[in-house]
View 1 (tube, rainbow, N blue to C red):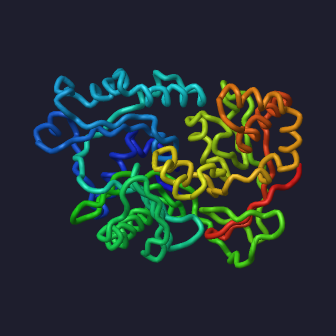
View 2: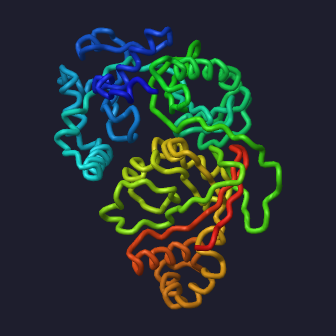
View 3: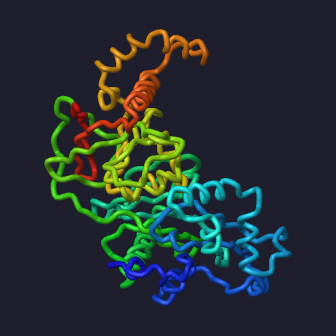
Length: 406
């Protein structure tokens, strides 16, 4: 059991600072922290004010704003003043919107949320900021994200897959990854944490050392007990990527393609899973990732590398690592509405589709766009979520997907 989940009050309202102090006591390198603004300024070091809220440990990402202390903040003399500044500063509106949405969805008043929010003061550690996550099905496999730049999949300390938005893992980075994974495992297995959890851990790889920044709970480890060594059968499509395993016989999931009542958002209830784009409310998705057994992405960008380069963000990390299974497959109408139904829908709605072509000045409406219209119409008609039933077989390395008829 996790020491902090047993009683969240043990986090003292500041998960980053509290856990940073604990980890350092256990011999792990952590950047210097400061108890007051004057103490931080006197140090002469570059300082970052990191957002803190109790829910950060096992909850939603991207609600608070961290920022570097500069001359702009000279008038701010207290940590409380920094937090007040973060809430009123107009340049931080995206985080305020996320926090307000979080409060609306969970029934918490924004005043209470603000009262529970704070900042901790840390020395800025120079180096590559890494998000490291142990795989949930295969021991010795790790996912490494340098936000905004590159994703790497490592197994037995070797880079086996890399997707880049900008730059790549250097030779030195790759040679030093075993030491990064060693730090990750030391922290993961400290007595206050559940060693079966695969946390999303933020680390800094500097020129000489690896430092701890944050522990954010991910999904639990559930090893594969079989090897998927056959070829896809009729009706099955092989996924481009999978993280997480099913039972040998596979599992059937009811997956939401389009949510009903997007404006107010569906209730926060457990669901088997959802497709990316089923609802464009990222705060709702953040709240639901942990409740979902599977998160699915139908890749409209062709290559997996192109898709991953667009997911090197906080929300992308949550999407990939908080549900039991994360799966990417190339878009195929057979996994959605079904090719026959899509053709029938296209014929019935020929005039509607033609109007869209004229309106958007395009030569043709693509199949996935027609499918979107199909599910929108279905949701309006039935006034309930539009779902598909997918049967998934995954050993954590390969996965096959097959749509079942309703």
